[in-house]
Amino acid sequence: MLLLENIKLALSAIKANKLRSFLTMLGIIIGISSVISITSIGASAQALIAKEFESYEAGYMVLMINWQRQTEDEGVAYEDFFGREEIEALKNRFPDDVKYAELLSYGNNMNVKVGRVEGRVELYGVGAYYNDFDKGIKLLHGRMINKSDVDAARENIVIDVEAARHFFNRENVVGRTLPVTVRGNDTDLTIVGVYERPPSILMGLVMEKRFECYVPVSLLLSRDDRSYYVEVFANPDKDAEKQGQAFVDYLNRVKGRPDLYMYESIESQLSIINTVLGTLSVALGAIAGIALLVGGIGIMNIMLVSVTERTREIGIRKSLGARTKDILTQFLIEAMILSTIGGIIGTTTGLGLVGLGMAAFGISVVIQPVVIIITVIFSAGVGVLFGIIPAKKAAKLDPIEALRYE
Image 1 (cartoon, rainbow, N blue to C red):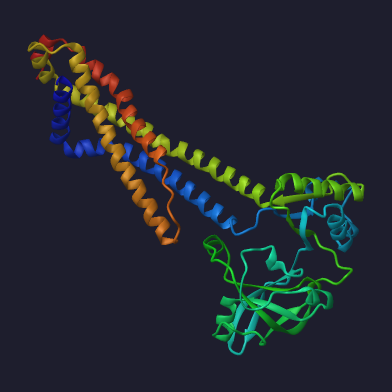
Image 2 (tube, helix red, strand yellow):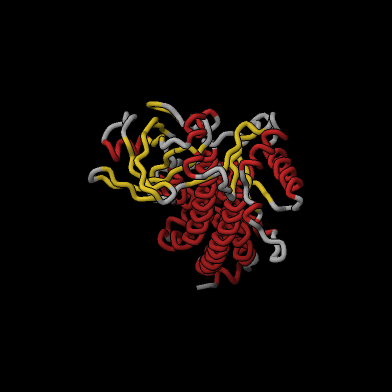
C-alpha cells in the first residue's frame, strides 16, 4: 500500500513539472533509442546477408592464389596459376567430393547496345550444365551451357530474363543474338537460354545495375590459359571447411609450395561478415550507451534540485511520522519512473526509426526482444543508481531544519 502511495506521489511530482521531467528523460531517450536502433540495424543486416548467402549451394567455394604468404624471393609465376591440369588432378584425387570444378573467368563489364537500347553486361564463363549445381538459376526458356558448347567453344550465351526484357522488350529471345566483345573481338553471341535468379536486395544496394550472362568457359579461356581462381561445388553432405582445406593441401603438395593456395567458402565468408557486423554493433552500441550515462547524470542533477525545492514537504512528511527509508524509497521510485518512462519512449522511438529506415530500402526489420527487455531494465537501473545520492540527501534531512526552510 505504501509502495502504491509512493508511486502516486512520484507521478504527481513528474506531472507538476512536465517540461523539466521530459528534458530530464531526454538523455535516457536518446541513449536507449540509439542502442535499440544500432542493435536492430546490425541484426537486420546479418539476417539480410544470411538470406543472400542462402542462394548459394552448400559446399560452394573458390580456390585461389594465396598472395599474402608469398615472399619476394618466392613469388608467384604464371605456371602457379590454376590450369586444366589442376582441375583434373582435383577431380581424380577427390572423385566423391568435387562435384563441379572449373576455372573462374569473367568477361569485361561492358556496355552493350541492341538497336537504340544500351546496358551493362558481364560475361561469366561456366562449365557444362552449371545450373545442375547452382540451384539459384531457374531456366525459363531454352537451355543452359552444355558439354558440346564447352568442348567446341561455341559462341552461345544464356542471358538474364531482365536483360531480355531490357534489350528486346520480351522474355523468350532464344535464337536472337547479343553483340559483345569476347577476348578483344566484337562477336554476336547466339542466345540459347534465358534464366531467372531470385532478386538480390544487397547487390542492388552496393552494385551498379548490370546483367550477368553465362557463356562457355572455353570461349573466354583457351586451353593454355590459366586463372587466379577455381570455382568448386564440393560435397554438400560433408564439412565444407574440411573439404576446402583438403583440396588446397593436396594442390600445395603437388606444387611443392606450402601455402601457395588458399580457399574461401560460403560458410567462412558468412562467419567473417557476421563477426565484423557483431563487433561493429557492440562497439557502436557501447558508444551509444554513453548517452545513457549522461542521461543518468541528468536525472541525478534534477533530483537534487527537486530535493532542494521540496525540502519543506520532506520536513512535513517526517514530522507526520514518515521514516527515513520511506523518504528514500519515495525519491528512488521517482528517479526510477523517470528513467523507465524514458526507456519506453526511447525503445519506441528507436524501433520506429529503424522500421522507417529499413522500409525505405525494402529490408525486413529484425527485432531482438532480449535487447529491448535488457535496455528497459537497464534504464530503470540507471534511475536507481543515479537516484541514490539525491534520495539519501532527502532522507537525511533534519525535519526541524526542513520545516524552517523557505
